[in-house]
Length: 256
Image (cartoon, rainbow, N blue to C red; front, side, top):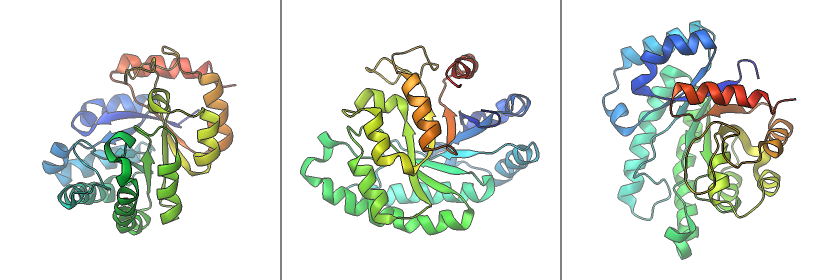
């Protein structure tokens, strides 16, 4: 687990947590909101990136997602989504992240009979970014959110078939929304996993609890993750430093 843990941090709070990250060897997953991207000062980002790289830490990025949808039927929503991802790729040129996590924007209840329209739009959208990701040396990772099973994400990844478009498996979202077992999910998408978001809940809301403090069976999860995706980034999505510290301590109890 040494030097493998990443932790979620909003870009606006990265500077204040920089010393903690360096001292404790925590690799940051930097979340860029739309507001952060609109007010980004490249010199400030460059300074933070240099400090992290000189300390030997890796970074990942979490792209903005609120109100965005790369597969939207409405072309204006796709255009807004494209603008935000273009901004993210600009930040990635400076930060040089290992992975950029993106949301797919799909759910069965919303799209229904428009699933194939969403899929076609998504394929067209992400094909335009995989070449940029390759040039930067990063991987775009599609995170499961509302998906009940993995077929939609798998169809997107299969269609584009690029090593620069892969999967971020979020164990908390799986616990809330999936109707298939974790073994079934990994059988379909395990080979695509380059990152996993690690947090706990009781299956009803996105509580972002430390590992072992909800009802997720991490005794099943960690062996699957380490066997199927041994090089994946492990990102703890904690809402405060105390929860982060508890999560790291609790994870050690599951690692043999």
